[in-house]
Length: 295
Image (cartoon, rainbow, N blue to C red; front, side):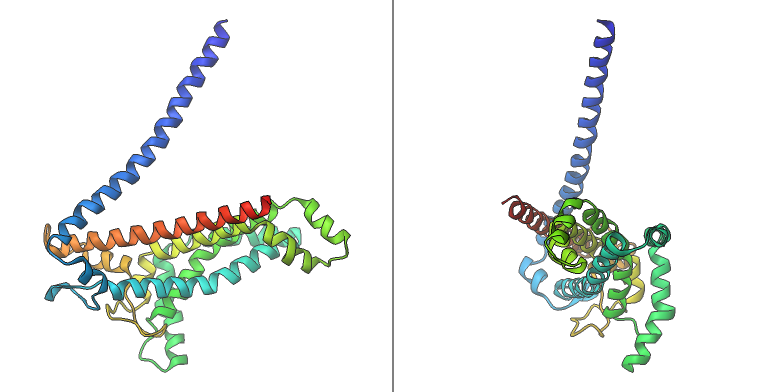
């Protein structure tokens, strides 16, 4: 009887411990959200929300707080990074899961995971001293600090996440799926393309969304490698400034409780909602694929 009572007490203690930690995470996220909203409201009492969203000039020294160039720059760099990282990441994950010899996999997979441990400032430095001059030589520009430079570096940083999560999703596909496909005459490539990857689609989409979140939220790399020009970009070879880089550059020097100070919180709130939209879209498509597979 005593042993049963002790076990029940432990169950109750750990149940409440896990519940408290879960609620603590929600409380922290809610606190961050409320802080952003509170300071953003303080900004919008001084500045028109329409001018803030649609304005084409970000120049706080002259009272211009148009965030549109920053949004377009962030979207441009993230889109470029995903155009590079998704095919490379999915192809590498498929190779590791379906084609890679065990001895090579034992070396290659840890090497890919170690790439995630490289500091972002080191990757940004490589973009300045190696990738930037190469882009400048190819495009005949004065320097290679532009959106394509940042996109390539962000793709490198997103690859470990996309590869690791996608490979886990592909490995989770039951072996019977492959055997059934091969048994009716499909070759190995057809099995991977038409059976394995569609079956692993929810996990692959989750991997892509994590990669997008990694790219949107990165600060140091884009601060160092994109040129930091707060102008409306016309293409990948223009210098850009992302939202995260703007916050990192200006927050340390802005006077407290000024319009500029609150404006930085407002653009942080915009970044928060951009990330939230990406997560919601990922969740929507994951659930849609799961329902499709269940049918």
